[in-house]
Image 1 (cartoon, rainbow over the protein chains, first blue to last red):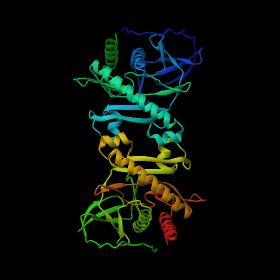
Image 2 (spheres, one colour):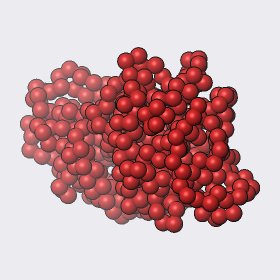
Image 3 (tube, rainbow over the protein chains, first blue to last red):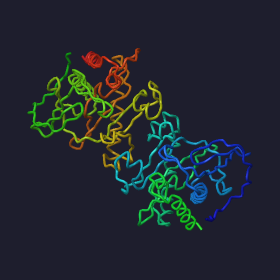
Image 4 (cartoon, chains in turn blue, orange):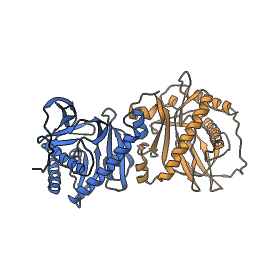
Length: 249
Length: 249
């Protein structure tokens, strides 16, 4: 598993103390207050952490896939938090004040959309469906709307318009990119944050945060293999890394 | 309990067979295909009919309150399905093709908003919060957004813009009206439908579909007394009929 990553000419800052540990990643301070190190773990959770496990090698794969996709998006003028890959599991990123909304965007019905609305899994949507989910483990990441975002003080209407636009653009770019790799991009979630007043795409883009179905066979190449006990979870992640690497080399 | 109802000069059509029975109302055909009779029951349900009971006299009260409020709204140029009161429990209305969205509008946090977002009950909202809930008992009336409405084929964007505008206008009118009766209008739900291509306000407006808190004391004068076993449910409904009648007489 090798990846072609064009690294920017940035002095690598010194890794400081851990400032956050999430379900799949840790964040560390650096001696530059504008930069943090994002470290990818092999821990896997589903259903708001009611299901837990390990996907061996996932952290390495998600780090590499995310790095490649962030670079692809940067080239297309989507500003991201990505600075450079530091190691197999570590990525240097710009420090963000996270906007507490998970942006979900869907091209084909699956998962939460099917559960919420009854639209059968696999239905091709007329247009991309955009959803706001409030980032709150306690409340189980509920679907919310712009009025709720305003009342919760999560973001301004102006910021959300910009985030909507960026999410739709990322969807178009990634849909086209994955199609070349014979993968249908079913849905995915993005997170954004503020960095010196500018909205940047943050978090990760990986089989943990996207649904990927192989064209023709419909084979699932994402975290649904773990969620739904479909077997060969590691193989699916490795396959996605291979396809992304090939198309970007 | 007497009410002042200005009745329109309409020939009363003959009551035909029952075409629908819901949780709180029945609908009957008439010999005029454009008109149906809406009959109000005393049956009370909550939590998607997991809790059931009877509120004696509720049907009579909700019929009368709804009639008065529909007339008040018509005077302010809000088109409704109301035609005239027929009896204590019956109202003649225009036949609607119901838009399968419950429009919830909120001025103060309570109920589902508190459960979904964690905003504490009683919090005054900066602006009215509008929510779309998909009318589906099977799916438990989930919160949805305009993208879901489009994919489900529930209504057009144009229709929803008009329904949003009507809902906000009804909220302003009713908030002002109930304030005169020393009642805070916390939140309520409206339903709309199509009648010969025109969007009309339908369903009912009553203590079953609104949260009413007495100003000063915070005493709940609505279905929450039934939902939360607060006692004196009938008294609350009677009090609301009295206050509405007084302010409209």
